[in-house]
Length: 581
Image 1: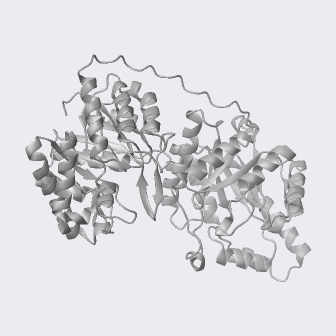
Image 2: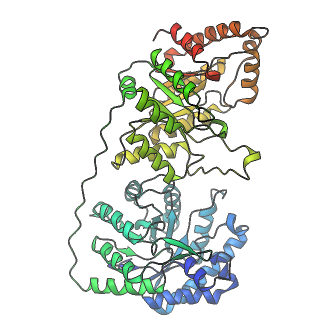
Image 3: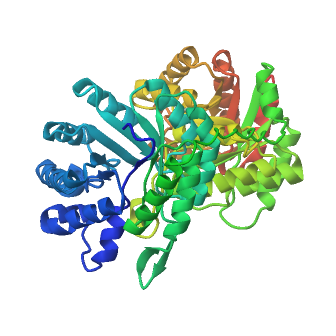
């Protein structure tokens, strides 16, 4: 890759769909069914001025193509067609590999890499990825087999620079620079030329003095739907002008993604040719980063000062009647509670939005709330919008959870999103603050001390800690095994723990929680203690047991996490009165 500017082709998928609207199959299948069409598209881009083309294999994988043999046949045909088209033009052919679909085997991507290597590929493009980890893994594999291979890594980012996994492109590029595994890296897809130009302007100084080249391949623009078809109306002249500006910033590798046609590449080739004939412009000056909004976090200050913290969970209402919830929150504040946590549609059952309730508590009652935030119901756009709103409302503490799955009976009507897991969400929240978009959040996460495989649970907690989680709220600690696991967590993790306590209010309640609530274990001997007790007697026992559990876990915890059963705030008040806080 020794060109001053290397120009790739445009988008095979959208261009094929525009030329052959009656073919509803993924364009990769045309490698076998309509090879002449694929070769003709390659040649059209080459005639337009592309110096490198991608094999028509972006969507090829064993999981998507019906097995390894079928995937290899599509890949082999795609490689042959691209090579045949490129040879008369002296153009480079890049083996194109996209992210593996959900459910794919861990080694499926490496299997494709290996087959390309066997065919003689020495140029690879990993495009439209949302995470750099699989790219680095594949690149390391290629470096072992073919040390001199040319590798380009490209990531799909929103206009603000985040992938759908919540990773910011600046951090991704830095990790790739540090790894030394790829020759070039940058962005493609999702965003149009205007927004990728803005990102290129901010990112270009990071490539100064680096041996890793900068690559940008924008969409033609943004799609619209016409007669049931997705179309891109971006002007080739506009696209080429923005690409020329990117080249002026130091972007060395350019090309097109969704919606780009040979016309886009032809005008871009001319723009770059005009530019290459002119003196090289001076490097762009990086704009200073926007500082994060000022914020005070009273809960974090108390925790950092080494003082014990008391948080109480209060269930959000299942309707629009808020009076009981607000009154409960007022009483908890008067009882000395430091924070009120609010579950986010627990067990995937709809309740009032936890973040809106958190904003209301902060604004009207001056309570420090900790809304739970699940990955189940929101994509990255909705998550970012919610975090911006929380920052504006001065809610600076959140508890991230992956989220309970949708009940099977509702899956035909209600779909989970799960764009990312809780560790990725924690990292995303931290990155928003580092980019100056929100005030800094303190991010908390859940720790299930009752997990059957606590070794795995502890490993997940370490990953969450590394992603930016600052403290963990445990599930209720009742059994001997749970106390042992709490001690292990205390010794392993370097972040504070809030010990979970849930008062058991009756024999029936004990049976229900032990049998039907995931993450809660109740020993048979405790269940037996509730047999035959009336409400008053059961509540008295609940207070004794809860206080005992709380005091026993004190050496391992920085605070307590009390869970209010059935809105019985009075019971929580009695427990708090017995605790030495």
